[in-house]
Structures are given as structure tokens and as C-alpha cells.
Amino acid sequence: MMLSLSRQNVRRNRALFAGSFVALGLGVALIALSTMLIWSVEEFTATVDPADEELLLALDDTMAMLGVVAGFSGFMAIFIVASTFGFAVTARQRELGLLRLIGATPRQVKRLVRGESLVVAAAAAVAGCVLGWLLTPVALWAMNRRGLAPGQIPLAAPWWPMVIAAGVGVSVAFVGAWIAARRAARIPAIQAMREASAERSRIGIGRALTGLLCLVGAVVMLVGIRAGNAELALALSIFVPQLLVIGLVCVGPLLMPLLVRLLTLGLRGNVLVALARENVLAMPRRTTSLAAPILAISGIAGTVILSLSFAADWDNGVTRQQLQAPVVVTGGDERTGEQLAARDDVGVADTGLLVPMGIGADGLESGDTAEGIDPEAAAAGRGTRAHRGDLSALTGKSMAVSRSFAWDAGVSLGDVVPVTFGDDARLELTVVAVVDDANTLQESVLVPRRLAEEHGGQGTGTWFVDPASGVTPAAMVSDLSRDLPDAEVLASEQWVADRDEETRANNVLSMVVVLGPSGVYAAIAIANTLLMGSLQRRHEFIATRLVGATEQQVRRLVVLEAGLVAGVALLLGSLITVGVAVLLRAPMTDGLHDVPLTIPWGSLLSIGVSCVVIAVVAAVAPARAILRGASPAQAAAG
Image (cartoon, rainbow, N blue to C red; front, side):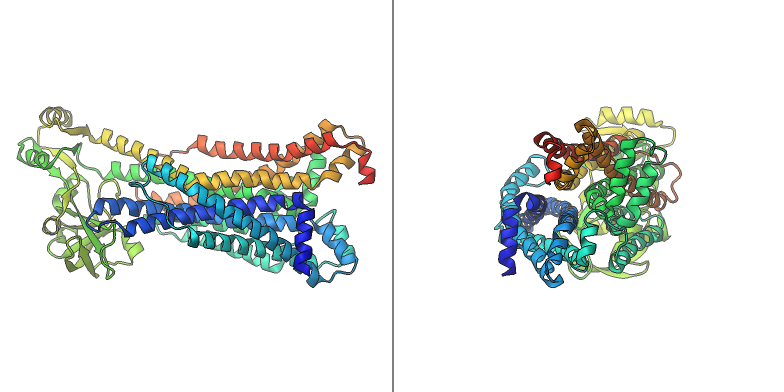
């Protein structure tokens, strides 16, 4: 009975539920797309010959990238869908209050809202799964064309990914509507009618505790990160902003009014600004829901962009500080190494051997690689040094690991670690040193060069050359460029600059891949939420015209309100971005003397400008249509 009533209510009020349908449908499509891409790559990987290590390594990198994409997409979809469904129910306080007034019990109100959310969620889940399935072949083609995926990865059977996406979407929508409906059902009929015109900024104990736990947990993780672990800092830059966004949205009804007053400080003399301010302050829950998508994308995307830039700064600083050799040779073949070793004007020609090697009892997986080095040559050429232990003890059955790898893998100095090489040989190696991280110069796991040779190690193709006494670096570059035509010979400063440029270019591509789908979805969600908010204020707009306001004044009022909402959200997003990035940069750069500071202002500003423009246009467009299609006299009838 109640489900039938819910279905009829949705059918009669299609426009009211359209925003929720769009948010959930696109959210399900985003989750389905990410899940199907991972599913397709995983099934394709299972068909690859284990001997094709290069392809398996490329597929492993693709899976890692898609895992991050899925994480971002899943969070944005779940967060926005829950927020949108909660907003849709909150915006119907008057209708729900009237139901209570005519005798509906709290249980009936909750059942009605749950039924409506189930009807909308079922239709949106089907549409979203179909859209995700249609987009997956396009995404696979684009990934292959841009070099992000090896070979032609076929589309796998989509049934399980669709079930996962639909299940997540329906569950989130149901939970979001259920929480809002429970709050509305607890309100007495008369009080519900009063709350239809204004909201209190008070929040429940559960919401307050959730927000507090998220905020405190994020701060503890940021403050507690130990110095020197740059990879952990980068990982936290992905996870911590999500906690902060959830925490701030939970306490939003308390925080938003304070920030609105701050932004309008000194502007209350303007009548429209004062009216926009009061309208926003009167509805703190609605303001929080409208600001949520902007806060999410600005805080998370901004933090990732700034953290990636700081990570590139860290890598550049580490490389310049640690690299000892003034000349770097890349390319060439095995003869290049022999020629360098035979030259009298070369003092040290440091290079390594890459060997497939898995750590632990699970054996070798695709992408597991160690580097065989000569400790003395590596120290002279690359500045490889032990943070703890003795690198000169890297002989026989031993290994050294970077500081970040030691933390991630739970490996300590003196541990005996089982390893598996690419030729299936299994050994136990003793950790004799923990070295400083230097991703551009060396692998995270180092073994004796002789051990790498015994198990099929291949040259890295890079030699760090220190000229013999009396030979200048400039003369060495000139001579080697002439004598090694098949290799590229560069001064170390130029080589470091080239690697830095390559790292930043890869970061840009990574940001497009990781943030692109979530960014597009967030943009649509921002427009969708603001559009919903304006459409539900039809009578308010017409009533404002009735009391003497011109159409242009009403539009300006809407612009100011949308600007205030976007401004508050961007302010909080900026605080997240700056706070997380600053707290992460300190441990990343600990112990480095000269680290550049690069801030991608263009990318950061483009996020803010895009959010403001989308919010204003989405809020003004329906208001303009409403005002043009109705006369002030209609307000009395409304």
C-alpha cells in the first residue's frame, strides 16, 4: 500500500525527484564505469603469458591507476548521492509536516519517504548501469590511445560490476533518505509547518560525533606522520581530505552560518546583500547540502593537485641533493657500459641491474622489481647512503630497502626476508641497510649486483659518470657525446631538469585520469543541486516580485545567494587544501636543504572559478525562467 503511494507520488512529482534521479544515475554510472574497467583489466591480465613481464608490469600499473580512480569516483558518488537525497527530503519539510497534520504517523512518513527513494533509486540504478556499460568501451579506447593501458583490452562481462554499482547506489540513496526522513518524522505537525520556513542550525548527537571523529582522525594522521616518508604523505593526501570533507559537512549547519556572516562582514548596508545573507542563514541545512558538492571537489581535487606538485618538488630536491656524478648517460646498449668502463677519463660509471623479485611468502607478482648495485659505485655516482645500517655490507645474500618501503612492508633492519626471483629461485635475504628514498635515482629494494646478475638482471640503461681527476664535466659531456652517438649524454643539472619536467607532465596526466571523471560528475552535481534548490523556491521568487522587487533584483539576489554558498564552500575547500598540503610538506622535505616550491595556481584557480560559474548559472537559469513565466499576481494564488 505505502509503496504504491510512493510510486504514485513520484509519478505526479517528476520534476521534484528529477534532481535525485540525475545525481544517483550518474553516480551509479561512475561507479559502474570504474568497476567495469578494473574487471576488464583483471580478466585480461589472467590471459597474459606469465613470461611477458613487460606487459604484466604495464597492466599492474594500469590496475593501480584504476584503483585510485575507483576510490575517488566511489567517494564522490556516495557522498553526493547521500547529500542530494538528504537535501530532497529536507526541502519537503512543509509537505511532510502537512502529512503529519492530517494524521499520518511518524512510521508512515518514514515508509513513504523510503518507498519514494526506492522507486527513484531503482530507476536511476538501471539507467546508470546502462550508461556505465556504454561508456566503458569508449574509456578503454581512450586509455589505449593515450598510452594509459597496454594493448587492446576487451570489455569483460559487465554483470558483476553492474550488480556492485547498482547495489551501492540504491543502498546509499536509501540510507540518505532514511536519515533525513527519520529527522522529519520526529517533528510534531505544527512545528514541522514552522520549520518549513526556517531551520534551526542544531544537529543531532550522532551527526556531531561523526563529524568530530572524522575531523580529529584526519588531524591525528596529518600530525602523526613521521619525517622522511614522502610516499605515505602522498597517500594521506588522497585519504585525509575525504575525512575532512565528511567532517565539515556533518557540522555544516553549525559552521556555515558563521562563515556566511564572515563573508558578508561590512556589506550589510546593501539591501540585496543583507537579504541574501538572511536567506542563506535561515536555511543552514539547505546551505550545507548546496555547498557539499563544491566543498568535496574543491577540497579533494585541490589537495591532490597541490600534493602532487609538492611531491615533484620533493623528488627534485632529493635528486639534486643526493646525485654526485656531474654527467649522466642514458640509452645505448651493453657496449655503452663496456666503453665507459674502458675509458681512462672516466673515474666512476655507476649503473644498476633491474631484476624481478618478490618480497615475502606470497612469491613474485607483476611489477615486483629490485635493483642490483655496487654499493661503492652507487655512493660515488648517485650518493646512495644508509639511513640506518651499513650499505657496505650489501654482499652475498643481503638486501637494502628504502625508508618508505620499510614502513609499508613492515621490514626492519636485521630482518631475514624470504624473496622470489623472476627465475623462480627462492632465497632468504638479510636486511643490512635502510636507505634514504630517491625514486628517480634508485629502486626501493636494492640487492648486491652479483646476485642480480645470477638471476637474470637487466641493465637500467642509465650510467652516472664521475670524470677522472683533471677532466672537467663539460669536456666529459663533449667527449662522450662524440664517442657514444647512440646514447644521450647530459650534464647532471640538465638531466635532473628533464626528469622533473617529465614527472610534472606525468602528474598532469595522472590528475586528468584520476580527477577527470569525478570532476565532471561533481560539476554536474553542483549544477543539479543548485537547480533543484532554485526550482523549489518558485513561490518565494514570485512573492518577492509581489512586494515590489524587480525581475532584475530577484536575479541579482539569486546570484548573491549562489555566490555566498559557493564562497563558503570554496573557503572551506581552500582551508582543507592549504592545511593538508602544508602539514604534509614538512615531513616530506625534512632533511633536505634546497627544495623548490611550485604552486600550480592555474589549476587551483580554475577549480574555484568553475565552481562559482556553474553554481551561479545553475541557480539563475531556473529563477529567470520562473520569473518570466509568471506574474506577481500569481503569488497570491500560490
